[in-house]
Image (cartoon, rainbow, N blue to C red; front, side, top):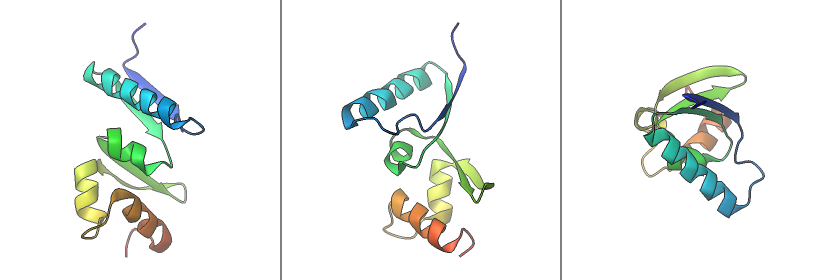
Length: 96
């Protein structure tokens, strides 16, 4: 079978940097073949590297679901990287 959708929970947690990079490269290859990949992560660099869309969950609730560029436009402050944005949102809430 050729999967059209993969759903993964923290797929890069616990991996060494080389294995993590290999897995993210595999995701990129699968994405080019039309496979949709949904994965949860606390590793923001994984989101920066390969996510097209972000579903931001806080306190068990979906509080934002949009493209990565739209998320950055809506929630990032000038000069902030994505990790800094997530940290600020988690500390102060999404409706600052």
